[in-house]
Image 1 (cartoon, rainbow, N blue to C red):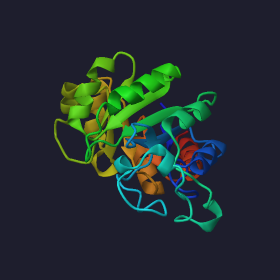
Image 2 (image 1 turned 60 degrees about the horizontal axis):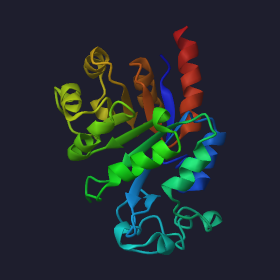
Image 3 (image 1 turned 180 degrees about the vertical axis):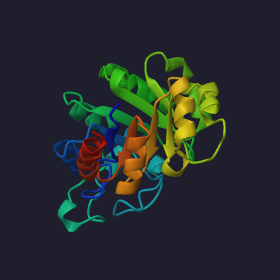
Image 4 (image 1 turned 135 degrees about the vertical axis):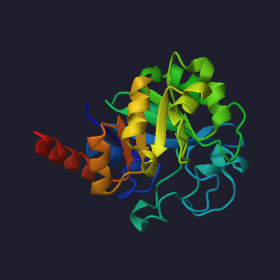
Length: 247
């Protein structure tokens, strides 16, 4: 099995995260998937941004949930990264799905509801994916156990991943009991025992956020299903080297 390379918030080491610049660049560089984060605006529009507030990645401040989309889309979401990206904007999930649909890329959408419980976030995102006929190549992930439970009704139609950075000797069983059919873990949690437990349950394991060659090699050696990386171009190059050396 080949470990899939998924661009974490796009090619976020080279362009402002979760913007079209980062997504387009990740695609051009050969990433096999895109990971992004979704939250809801004041008027219930799903938008792609990691933080609950806009302060770190825009020229404004305040909670995403307190802006309408019309207000959000006027913000500069690129100058914080570099002046050359001053026209970057926060985009909607709808815009992203229209862009990615014709491309041979898997999709990972993290529901950012572990700090703010957005009403109906799961249903809004699921229905949009269904409308665009993208369920089969999409994984919905969340750190929120209650959100996983709310997604259970969709588990026959879409992959649901429980995200965690917490140690648990029975992590695979715990995720399965929540209703997840995939597991996304912080790098320090991945080991041979976890992989063996997951394989027995036919549960894919993907690892975040893997940017160093030594850590990439560990994930490739364990045959992890995927890694989330800010540097997809490096991960792809090193995967080729790793595969060559295994022969």
